[in-house]
Image (cartoon, rainbow, N blue to C red; front, side, top):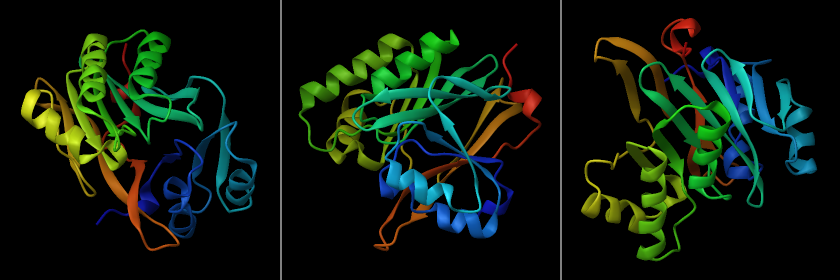
Length: 225
């Protein structure tokens, strides 16, 4: 179990309730924590969040929020969606996406262009649960062309996407689920960023994925010089 009272900040990818429902719990255990949301998110959803005891900040374009940490946004799917990117020194960009309604390759491509660094990894929902193998193949190839080395398709990516990657791209495929943890190292000895996938509890009692990032070492170590 992770203490969400120690979370430094929360990034909401888009305004769907399966991605914001866990904020009520965050408010209980970490009142006043900063929550970054897309500026063009649904007004009703925003008003609900904004009335809580959270420090809500709207993001309308790619923004460095802390050294080594950027929010890539916002891209219209619809809905408008943003992504969190961590720039790991000597490794590359680690991209966290919510549902990728605008296309996961478009979010990663925007991160690469805006931050002028090559992507290393993308993890999150790819919104491809109801698609065909050719579209999956094309999406993977576009990500690899951008420079992505590891792909972790979770949430709404779909079982077909995961199986296709396991069968055809085993070296690039990463398996993850709720509770997944990973430490990215430089030369395997210097931990740079630590993250964990935390479940977001929704009113319907459905457990879905939300992103909460906790840095394991000083922020300055996560910046890319």
